[in-house]
Length: 90
Image (tube, rainbow, N blue to C red; front, side):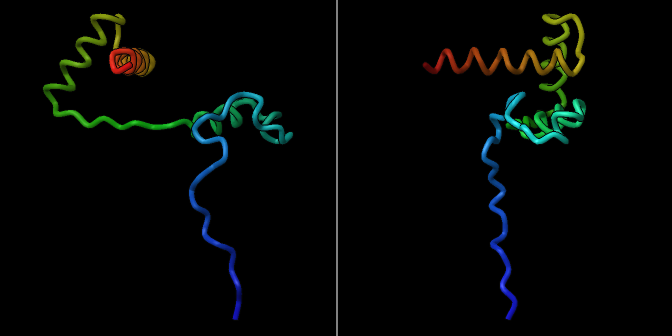
């Protein structure tokens, strides 16, 4: 009977803490865009589902504070909110 290796667990040794320089293989270090995409793809994720009205209010606040609702501004606003919440919890 054939013997197969165990199915991978899904865990990855650097996930989600992979930083520039952690990967030394020449393919990844020579392909800058692919390397950065690989690092970004291994970062932790939080998905927030909001009803339409709450979502609209959130985006309005982001625009008021950041001047626009570009993806980078929304990301900054979410990181700020998480940082503030973590400080409050400490």
